[in-house]
Image (cartoon, rainbow, N blue to C red; front, side):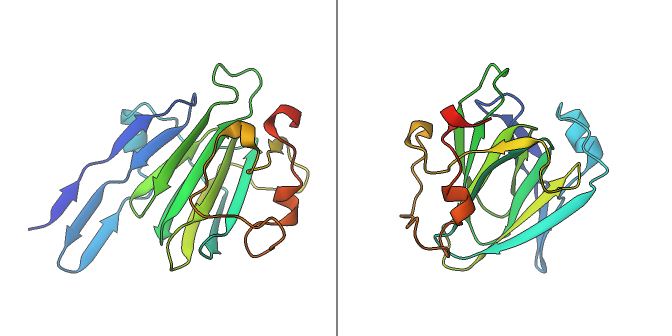
Length: 186
């Protein structure tokens, strides 16, 4: 008899940012997770996101940090292997939740719907590399609209679980370290 976990979606403190538990069916062979089902999203009050036009998978080592990037696109993100600490910040100056930061533990079966203009970042916390999937409703192109924020900006209040050596490119890129704090982001 299979074990079934229902799809659920929970609002966060950032307008439009949702934490999602995928529908999951587990039996003796393993687990099947519904990464995206249009009808489930619509029934939960989430926006229609299809069709996806770009899907990326990153593989990131323990302690490495990526982000915070807030392009002008919807992103549906999830961990499919390993575990990560996710951080999100509202960079939309006209948003009622501008400057609000939300963090979440990201493990298999958990997704985050990231709206346009909300910064997305994560740090791998598991000993095994994290495989992080990003689905985009627009193709990424250099110079596209959006912003980026320094993920180590103390004003954000993010307590990354593992120390980050800003001089070590295996832990954080020079590009991410060079991003402005939220107060200076455009």
